[in-house]
Image 1: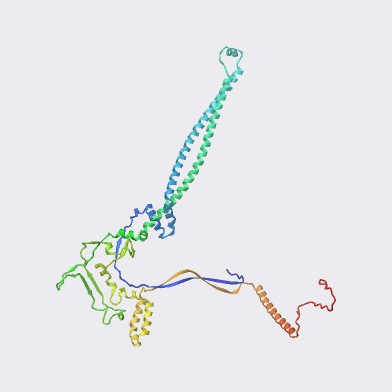
Image 2: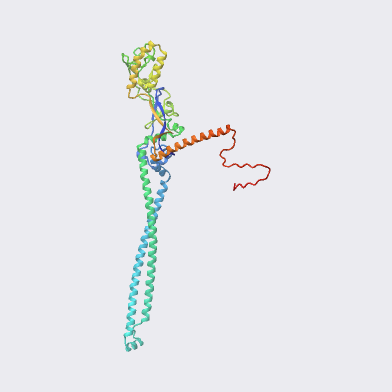
Length: 484
């Protein structure tokens, strides 16, 4: 942050880097054997397979977006399935309970309706009997007295009260059924929302798991190589030591000169020598020729355990689903394959001459020749060195590359602005402040000269005292400091 608000500043941030020049050279030819490993088929890469290897997959995931799905599959998938099944069962039971309560409410409502109609009929009969009782004559009352029947308002009123009680009971029963239905409906809504949320989360996680499985199937070699790398050495040894490998031997042909048969190996060498940029490093009189070698192997009739052929405790790496182990000794096939990489002067050497040297080594070599050889010999080598340099510069696969590795260090450069940010009015005030400071400095110098002059005159008093009072004699004087 720029603390000066009057001048602009530009900050340049640089990330420090390390630069390395990387080159490679063939220093050793080692025979190897490739042992095929079983790779699961796509249908075998299931959730159970991922759970069995999750601790290895978690270390070698190609993208962090798959990590939540792997963690869910390894830690929560079984529990979520159980919780979803329980929620589904509870939801089904709650729905059945709600359906039962709806049926009970319908029955109770129908019964209340029937009771209400019965109550209305009772009221109508009571009103009819009371009306008939008030309108009949004296002869009707005499007939009723001698047992002739007639209206009975009290009995009708009793029947009305009984119908009213029955209706009230039916209404209360219907209200209780409706309240129970509302409560269970509320519970059903809660269960439904919980089940829907759980199901949505479960389906989302299942989609992530399917994406993870598709990713593993598409990159199975990467993950299987990681699984094989984490296998304990002893377990790997016991798993592979009895694997049978064929014994490879060269076929033999009769010896034209008699004696023991000869190996069936043929060489075709070109008569004309080829150009050799390393001729100066070879023995005098030697030349380089192109050659072609061929041979025939005996039919495979015998096998050996892998432990007798390869060093199972020192795996070199992987190629696809093949595990690479160093052979304990060459066989006919590896000798044939290693022949182009063996040079009589340098030992192990790349057949491509330009791959054995880079421009940096070439520069050191030329400087060494210039310092150690006589001038005549160095001049004689210049055409060869020039041609060698042309080949190195024209090679599209130039040997030795420079790589840049970023670091966590930071370098900051500050560039002050050329123009201030103040307006002209303030700039002029700043100029006047400079003049004022200069005058104050001049005044201070003159004041120092005056004080020096006083010292030369033996005036040691303070010149800045405003008033000085001298009291002489032996009397006691009273001085009013405040009024003096």
